[in-house]
Picture 1 (cartoon, rainbow, N blue to C red):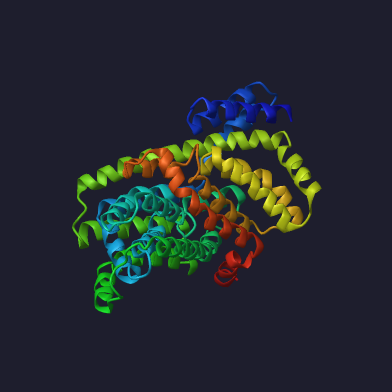
Picture 2 (cartoon, rainbow, N blue to C red):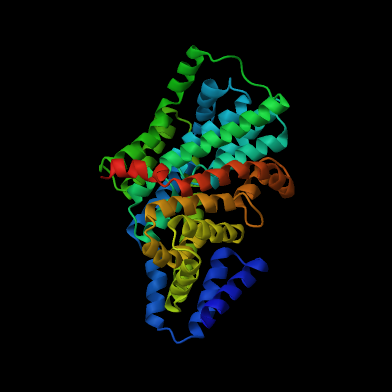
Length: 426
């Protein structure tokens, strides 16, 4: 266990002095690796295999599809459609914010893409309508983390690869929890709005709703193509990602003619940057996790957790407490790659369903995106809304309450996540 302690000490030391996550993982792993008796070929093989996985090919395509959506004006159509449907509720644009994120979640699969793409549109519209800026920033931040829960989800793909779980089942398992998150946030929005007398749109207009829905119909088919193709067996998740890119490009270039070659080039460059960062983290974290496993850290953690309780619910609560703390300091993909191998032995002993565990871990780590010091969503919204980071933290804090409530609900009632996968993959 000496190597494990040194590994963790180096990791948090590098992070504390501002070294990027992938470099912190890689450096700490390499230092401990070369100072131990672990075989060199096995270490090199682990690093290469960490990023050499067929399901991971889906990641750049889903990122590219999200980038094309942002550059083709689809976000405005989604926002207008959502406004015509729920803008009349108390705190109308707050509900529109949440509903737009639910729809965009079925296209991008990343919280940061939601915050950066829809965030600017949503916050400006809410500010123009008379909403307080902190409220607009808070609800935008909270709703953005629905993206990685409702499929497609980059985080669930990583989890599926690491835990060797069906990505199709994980995608199906995320739908109901994502909708519950949306309802919880909408309840919070309504409560705030009634107390503060926020404005709302006039009463529901059926004709306008039909018109706006028709305008957004083709983009709304994107999640249907992705999820429907996977559930019916027509696509693998990787093939679904490719289909999403082709469909998005067809909409932007052929139907709406709002996407030019310059936009495609910019989207491609951003996709390469994001994908490179993700795969660097995955490869570095693979070595990190392998060293922990080789030093029996998983067995030690499992014994410590099981010494406290063998009740699956209590074990899940303990695991989620560890994930919550790690989410404060570590990027989502790195945390998944490191923690999942450590949790698997204990999960196997008490009979925790790995699909259920994956949904809980991703939701928990998404909450970490809304908390300092890492809090990537907060940094993005601070930039797009021209708001100090500290103010974004304060604005988002109240919305953590319903999100943590949903997490506890999913821990206590696993079937909320497992019902749909059981139905779609009998």
